[in-house]
Image 1 (cartoon, rainbow, N blue to C red):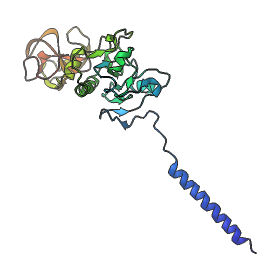
Image 2 (image 1 turned 45 degrees about the vertical axis):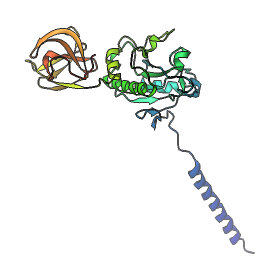
Image 3 (image 1 turned 90 degrees about the vertical axis):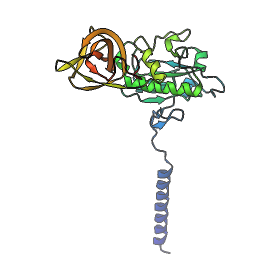
Image 4 (image 1 turned 120 degrees about the vertical axis):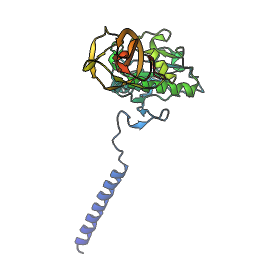
Length: 289
């Protein structure tokens, strides 16, 4: 008997087996996982990405059935956005928050489901009854506190308050430093509670004004007053956005004498005496700083 048919048969069987194995591996092998989880959307809050914290860093619950949610606790992360999200995924952290916001654009990531208890307040009772919100940045550096982050965070807090029946007051929307027994100082002295609470309560307008000055440019200062350092300038005739308005030093300009200063960016203010806004002083539905 010739061995050629046998060899051909064995070769065909081997090739078929190898091809089948390769196809099987190609079909069942899982795709490489995103280690952070960012890219998946939150099921609790639509604008948020979902990057789950380590199960070692929070307590599974069934809120509000198991515990009533009565507060929102505001934190400053003392670190970066990505670093904070990643830290909550480290089993050694023994800490977590429900949400973290990015300074540059107000992007938000959820790390713990709202039904579960994040470990953020340093007080178990407050943990069980609150949602914890972290914000990228450092307590001693106001530059991290951008209008984009304030507005995005306030939108979440307003959403939470509406869904859980949390009063939109400072008694129920608090800083980490206000938790009984707190050893932390965040969100810190630079956090603008007046501005934030107005945003939470729906005063969310953005005004605009046109610069008028006898010079070619108008100085922009780091705070609401002529004694604050100059941090830039805007040209005569330029139109600027007004995110909030504050009381500062009195200035006389083309549009009269006023102590109203307009925030046109993060830590960037110009006197209302040099802006044509269509209003005498305060602009309706624009928050106070």
